[in-house]
Length: 188
Image 1 (cartoon, rainbow, N blue to C red):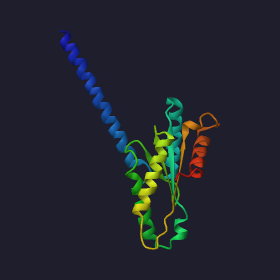
Image 2 (cartoon, rainbow, N blue to C red):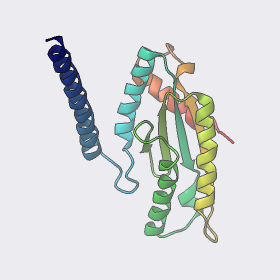
Image 3 (cartoon, rainbow, N blue to C red):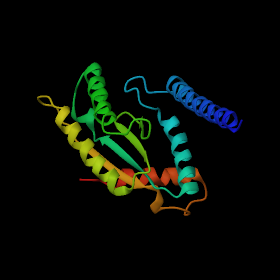
């Protein structure tokens, strides 16, 4: 008799696990289909990223794990290169593709913040890891984006949330400060 109870409990646990996995897959699919993305790069928009960064700050406050952000900018790219719009778009797509390959799928999130700036949030990554990724991304962009007469100057900056807890009145201020620090702190 106890076998039946045990088997019934096992079947119930398995079915709950399967339901949970299916729910998570459905949520991921919904997120992919409904999160506003930049039409050119297929990355998150700035507004969506700012909302997600607020979530990451709150999560970091709760669980104590650090997260880092990486800011990537093509310094004065449009001013230094007189290219037709379609070529400029192709180069920006290529830049976005460079770091899409270097970030952890399903963990890290990337967004286009302005015409020539990108931001990557890396939950659970300390500053040292973010700096390594920054160097890797910068080198990959410099390798891939080449053409005669093309001037590409890549600037990267990083910041870690755990280094600045409790100093700000609101989460929005913390996110603003993280971005300010990342844009002002250059990595090789």
